[in-house]
Amino acid sequence: MSYLRNSILATIVYYDIFNYPLTLVEIYKYMINPARIVKIEGGISEVSINSIVEELDKLEISGIIGTKNGFYFLNGRDDIYNLRMQRHKIADQKWKKFLKFVKYLALAPYLRGVFASGSMAINNTGEESDFDILVVAKSGHLYTCRFFLWVISSLAGARRKKHQKIAPDKLCFNHYIADDSLYIPHESIFNAQTYASLKPAMIAPGLIDNFYHANLWLNNYVYNFRPEKEFIRRSVTVPFIFKFIAESVESVLSLLKLDRRIETILRHFQQERIKKDPVTYSSGGRVIFTDQELEFHPYSFERIVINEYNRGVMRLGIVPYIKETDSGLLGVS
Image (tube, rainbow, N blue to C red; front, side, top):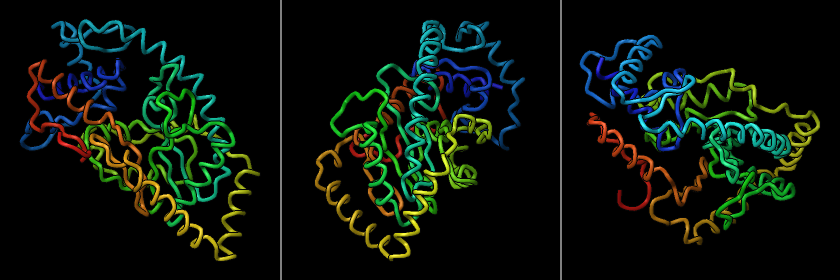
């Protein structure tokens, strides 16, 4: 099956950009949808682990890929195996710090979920890596939740500040969505791989399934992806007192009919600051500030990664049926 061969190769190419060799299970889970590589009449037959193993063996014999201790990489890229092992050890230590911070974030009213994103989510961190976070907030209280997270993380000395280019072990709150608006419309291979690898650190019951059900478009890019329940093993257990405090604040504000008023004030204040910041309009990124979503990626790597991916598959003689583009970043592609 040439389409499967090329899809596997494309997946290895994509993660090679991050110096990240893949295991067999990871190739299966994050495999780029074959329909993006070649036009397939009549649909795609089921892709099994065994069929992937067969194709990987052929690719290794032909010298296109290499393997070491169960990890696969492009030929001549043996060095990234050791790099992954080093970064995995670093990530294990960073997860301990991250989860400690997340536990205190539970004090924030209207917080419904915290996902680890980026390099943390796949254990591919360096010593200087920060903690990228996707936040889910209660609908109608997005800006209030952000304010409380700002206060708590600032008091804990854990917040990445705006002008810090390098902020090891700091929390980077770069994306917020409301719990009644979980669909993320910014579709691209980069975002699909990013959201497919999210790891929930603190999550309300049922929110994981709701999130992925709202974003079924991920499978247009990541063919075999299904959310896994076992990855909750790294989530925190919220202390009862923290949960009680957060819920009490929500109840009091609602009882006094202050919750909507506070949200209105904080929304106006925060949106005005965002509008006045020149960074908001930087080319090559995206900043969003609506009632359903806040996104702060003014200098996104998305376009860089996608362009490198397109060049990478072309170097291997793969001409994809669908050329990958970014999800609508500012500036000319």
